[in-house]
Amino acid sequence: MKKIEHLRVNIPNSSYKIYFGDNFIANFPLKKISNAKEIFLIFDSKLPESSLKKVHSFIKKSKPSKFESFKFVANEKNKSLETSERILEKFIDLRFSRESLIVSLGGGITTDISGFIASVFLRGIDVIHIPTTLLAQVDASIGGKTGVNSKKYKNMIGTFKQPNSVLIDTDFLKSLNKRHIAAGYSEIIKHALIDDVKLLSKLEKFGGRIDSVELAELIKISSKIKAKIVEQDEEEKSVRAHLNFGHTFAHAIESVQSFKGLNHGEAVGVGMLCAAKLSFLLNKLTIKEFNRVMGIIKKYKLPTKLPSNCEPQQILKAMELDKKNKNNSLRFIILNGLGKVEIIENVPEEKILNSLKI
Image (cartoon, rainbow, N blue to C red; front, side, top):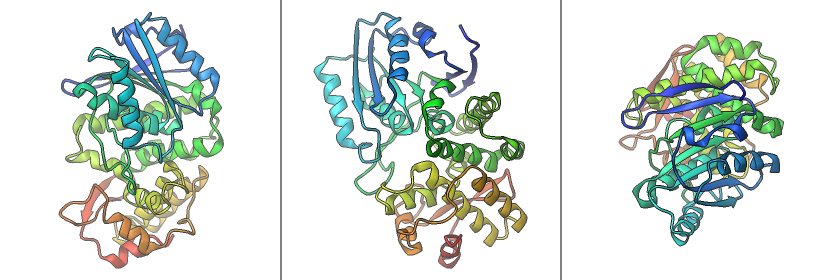
């Protein structure tokens, strides 16, 4: 078997391992991480057949007594209660039990909805995530946040459900287009900006090759940052909120566009720039530091302007329904220098609107 490394996420009563490697899934022993005999695979219909074959091999080698699957178009429209209900009804019709296991295969939408279903079916069953996008590998699959969208707003319905394991195989990334790769880099950049200036320097030097040893190392470093924060605050009562840097702006942009414009990673890229500008306007970031943020966003081909169909007033209105708000006050995660963050409230509306003019 190819070399596989792992990182343990230490959470009371819910600890698990993240496994890292390249092209290892097909030969990885499922029995090493689960004894389940009833397995249900939830996967993105856009995945290449080669990816699906590897995971079928991974599952079938464990000789399950029951193996079923659900294929869906993994987009924000289908990340819904309606899709969740269809999957849950199939679980019930097929008589899956509390001893069953969900395996998710896909990007962040797939891990989010799979984790949500695992948390509510029979009040909780096991789930293993096999993320196939860079964004999901460094962010969405780690930490136990699950969620589906309401008709207008992102991730308004959800739970916390830690996976049993996460299997990060960089071979899946070779099938992604440049836009989806850039989307994943936005979350690595976020982790660097909020926690690790050395990682920021690595990103500034990195050439961006998908099949490189350097990218595998960036994924591990980024995953460690996310895991470290989740270990301190599983249910986002304090420091886990730092991971929302750029997301208050990003979710508002996605909502205004009805999830039909920028993808999540692209929206986070713009959102981080807005949050960095707000940090500058509040004298928490120097112009040199702001320009460094702008430079890294540009380097990884992420958008640096609000979409033309998003007016600042629309964004502001959408922010008012952000689930991270407290006591009807907008909350922002801002940079207090590079690698450090703080949470602020009661920001003057004028400064918020100015931060959207990038």
